[in-house]
Image (cartoon, rainbow, N blue to C red):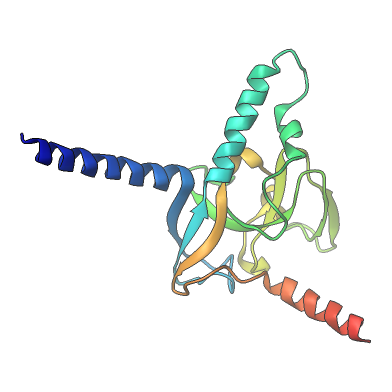
Length: 194
């Protein structure tokens, strides 16, 4: 094999490895469909980008923290909860607590050690839930068609696979804010104008 041909083959192989690493470690292209995140995401099918690096970095740092502090009896997930890489309002992909082989898309409503006011699936009255350390509370934007923390409780940060940050199809651009969030912001603006 000539040197020029070898360089071309090596370059193609390196590009392929880099593309796979980019897909698995940094940014993942995912597709999904279903009513639980409507109207934010299309129930007929959506392609979106997921930032996986933040979740991976958290897992790497929590595993190095737990191995370096093996003499400590504190839970490593509670130590990492104070520096949660997510924010309320983020849309995330997580392993479904109902089917561990499935990924689901939900919105973060509560962070570790926060109180969340919500309606659980089996109750008519709203309740306040304290999110435990190392967990988040997630809900679908379409509450009537979503199986989420109101059904299965808080989700471990270890089960969060990444944060959705960009729509690819059918609409290209950043994710819109949560529908109720828009209404709350409009009410706040009206009150400030009075």
